[in-house]
Amino acid sequence: MIVAHGIGGVRDLPVPEWLFFWGAAVVLIVSFVALGALWKRPLLSLRTDGRPAPEALSRVALSTPLRVALQAVSVALFALVFAAAVVGVTDPFRNLAPTWIYVDFWLGVPLLSVLFGNVWRALSPWRALADLYVWVRERLGGEARPLADYPAAWGRWPGAILLFLFAALELAYSDPANPRALALAIGLYSYVALFGMAAFGREPWTRNGEAFAVLFGFFAMISPWAVRDGRLRVRIPFAALSTRDTTPGTVAFLAVMLGSVAFDGFSRTTGWQNLVSRVEAPYIVDNPRLGELLVTGLHLGGLVLACIAVAAAFIGACAVAQDMVGSSRSLTADFVLSLVPIAFVYEVAHYFSLFLTQGQFTFPLLSDPFGRGWDLIGLADYVPNLAPLSPDAVWYVQVGALVSGHVAGLAIAHDRAVTIFEDRNAALRSQYAMLALMVLYTVGGLWLLSRG
Image (tube, rainbow, N blue to C red; front, side, top):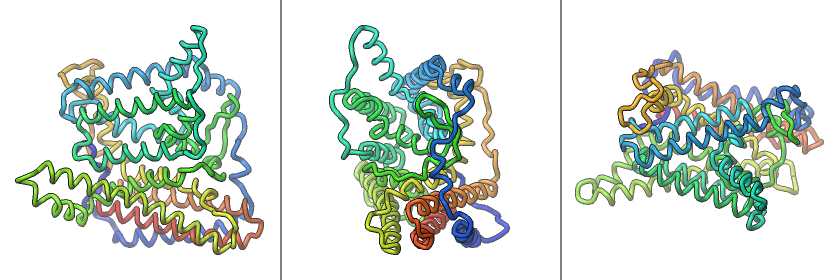
């Protein structure tokens, strides 16, 4: 399958896998001790705004011509991918749409967001179309006003639901790389995105309801680059995550981010594959459609349970922390953003090998997006390197990414703790449960990777 993720399989490691699990746990514990001994006052939360970037750089990066050019390219690529999904060949290996959506878009934009900030604001084709509509309407003397105010109680719940639906398409549907299925998904999502911006305004819907804008916006908070009051600013990486986020649905959204990747790994374990076979086997000859439907339902149920498990573990850890410090308020809003770097490294660890291998097929597919034998940009004969890294190297990158991301999560939560608790001992007590959570997420993530 074109959506097969990451390199698992056989490795010839110099030490047993279990030693990596213990080593990762020890690194987190040592990091926790070091944070408690050396990080005694807020460092990140005092630097969330950063400092102004050089004026010339700010002018270029935020210039209208650059933004319009990026939006034009984005809309053109969107139209090309949608057309390929609609009328291109149905072979997912010869059609541009599956590789572009599941590899270039799904894995490439998060990386760009972490490196350069909220680039999706300029790259989103739906935002570009909405901006064009508003521009034309205003030039014709009209006024583009939303139909209603966005309900504050909704928060990020619409975005969480849409992100879950995308994950369900990728992980639960029997043929997620089918170009026609992707065409339908693109059409439905585009309708919801454009209708949401028309109904509630571009900014409110982008912040809360447009799933990919919310997702990439979270990843952009890791970046050292930000925009404030029309000016580019430079800040300490991760500093934007050391704040309290009370928006409803935030825990649910981040749980979908983490839970979907975790389920992707779990669904490739021998135990789960055996369960799938047992469910499908009685129907595979006499009623294969029913068997396929049951397997889809099984995957969907597993995905739901994975998201719930991630959310429950986090909420439980925050409840324990609250009890240990005797706080009168819930701490979920204070620590929820510490999950963002974990979500990013989960994606890196699980999918970067797919990005390195399948991503290379983008070049010949751009030359022949519809699978008709064209060579539009002279790269149809490009031969990808299918083994850019050895399995051992992939494993080391996976381990390093997971451990680094969880250490970052610990640091963010610790900075938040010393910000909200004047008593240093109370701040440390609030982090015992977070340490246990990070160890659980890290070891669990490594186990899933080792089973793939």
